[in-house]
Length: 193
Image (cartoon, rainbow, N blue to C red):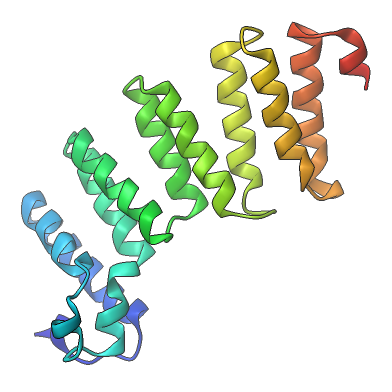
């Protein structure tokens, strides 16, 4: 009854659904918790939406609930379902930098390295500085660790993209990472530049 009540905001309703799912988890009902979240995050049809409150119509864009559902799918070791959740998060454009990093990590753990890099790329396109800085740092670190000097031109392109819009106060870490790449795998004059 509580999730059907007309609440003032989608955040309040999302908190209620999250607590409902966590109650199921505390009673070791993970499947039921996943079902609850899937039900809460379903996009209401146009006909059904007419009878819903504004909070209920906007609930399917709750970052909190999407993050909780992604965590549950990962915990269930259901990679296709977890990927579907993260892809839906990107489609709805409700991703946070942390969700982008979590998705890329999940893909990397399952050895989908190029898909992991694509997740980072989608993340850096969604956000601006300063929010995108953490994504860039992790992305560049993972790319250089994976390929070293084998894909040097691609690495250089990535660093140039990262440095294109970075504010001066945030550029230091990226510049040091870029210089380290050039020092180890590139040219000394590039590292000095």
